Structure formats: C-alpha cells, structure tokens
Image (cartoon, rainbow, N blue to C red; front, side, top):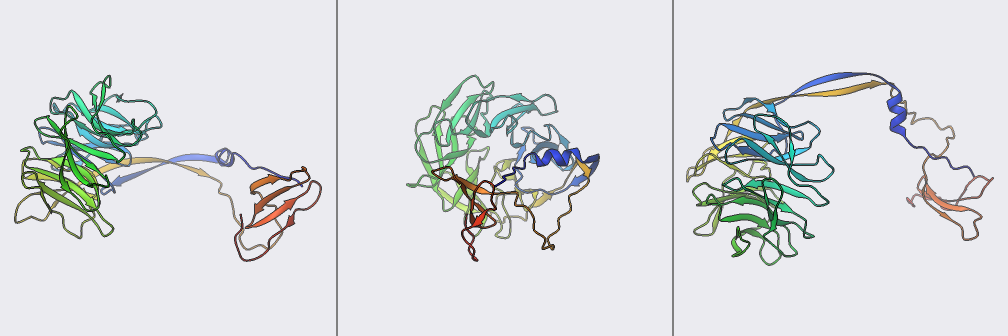
Length: 355
C-alpha cells in the first residue's frame, strides 16, 4: 500500500501567482460596530473590518488610526481625548492597546497568555477597567493606563464583563451571567460593595453609565431579538428604548448628554435620546475606503463529472494492526484495511458515512 501525503497546498498556489492587483472599496455600513465618543463630543471612534476609525460627530469621511491587520475592536477614549484604547488580537491574543486619537504609533498595554477585552477609562485617566480571564473565567479587573499594575475586582465562577465607570470614578457597572442573578451589577473601585442593579432576561452586554449617574444603558439579547434598555438606577426599573425591528449590536452606547446617546444597530451608527416620546433614531453616515490586495493566479480546474478512477488523497484516523501487518483507516465515508504491496480492502460499503 502506498500512502501519499499532500502538504503545502497554499505554497503551490502561491507559486502560481502571476500578479497582484489592488481593489478599492468604499464601506458605508458594517456589522457588529462598537462606537465611542470623544469627551468634547466632536469625534466618533468606531471599529470596522478590524480597524479603528475616527470621524466628526456629524459623520462623513473617516480616518484609520490602527493597522488593518491589528484586528482592533471596541474603542474607548481617554478622558483628555488624546488617546483611544481598544482590544486587539495583534500578538495572537486579545490584549489592550492604545493609539493617539490623531493617529500614530500603537502602544501595547497588556500582554501574556490571558485575554483582556472591553476597555473603559476611569474618569481621571489613571485606570482602565477590562474583562479578563486571568483568574480562570472572565472577571472585572482594573489595569493602570501604562499596564504596570493590575487589580482584580470581581470573583466567582460566572463571567463578568462589559465594564463601565460611574462618572465620579467610584464604582464600575458590568454584566454578569451568574445563575443566581443574571443582570447588571456594580462594584466599588476597591472591589467591595458588589450589588445587583437589575435582573435581566437574556444575555447582557454593552453596559454604559449616563453622565448624570441616573441611567445605565445595556443590551439584552434573547432568542427572539437584541434590544437596548435604559435602567433607572434609583428605581431598578429597566425599559426597552430600541425598536423591535432594530438589530442592536451588543456594545456600549456613547453618551452625548444625560439624555442623548449614540448606539450601533442595523449596520449603522445611530443618534437618539431618552424620553417619554422616544424619537426615531437618526443615522450618522460614514464613508470608509479600504484597499484589498487581490492575487491573480491560475486557478485549479475541478472535474466533478468524470467517472475515471482517481487516487484518494485524504485518509482519516489510521490505526496500525497489533502485529504491524496492516493499517485500518477511514476514506470516502468507509473503513478500509491496507496491507503493504496490495490494494486496500473496503470493510464497509453502504449509505452510512463511517469515519
């Protein structure tokens, strides 16, 4: 029996490359966008195609501030507006990085074998709250803005994530999926005084504290829909503020004032406000230009109609016989026995897929 192994198919394809041409695309919509607002309310940062972009609050053309290959997501402005932190897969794991809001060299803030995600700056800019699995499951941690110090705030076997600072910097609100009380929680900066703000049906994400400390916005996702809710902290009552027809993305809203905010849904960034007469959200238009290098090469031709015998180039789960006389393996949905110097023998032959 002769066994042939095919490796490096992509190398063969690369060898056949004739040329590379650039394809330029203009993007005006996107899925799973996360948006942040600068402290002066003039600039929006958002993620699209693994890149962090910025644009004026009114919308329009955008500027990329991260490398296209950084897989950068969930931006957060520093309180002075000069820096944008984000999570990036740039080094093979989710870590916190930052870049100047005006563009420039990226700086890695966290590193190591664990994930850090969903950054949120403290009001004084000294700390960044993140969700990290350093303890074995996702908990809320605070990390100094230079990455030199880290402190765990929450513990337990459930996942805690989506942190957001209170405007006075004393507490952090976050989502928890614990069995005894799924919902929105808060904890102090010292890691004490944890309490449930409101139980929530469905998966919670995108927690965001209003600047007047009156409301917390969050996204709840159930089997039927994802929806944006506003929680009144004083009463513990949450009400849905998005339309049932909207496809809400599960990331933080960005507040322009105690009543007006940005959120992402339906492939767009939207602007609306809280109120008894909830207005129809207004889309903020954007235009992002991306360039893709497209290789031109001789494509392999596949013949699916021929009935001519062909060699099998893939086998599965080979097992050597105890006496070394042959090998059992799966191929073409059946089990075979191969003996050196002889054609393989099929052991199964029916409509069932065996492997």
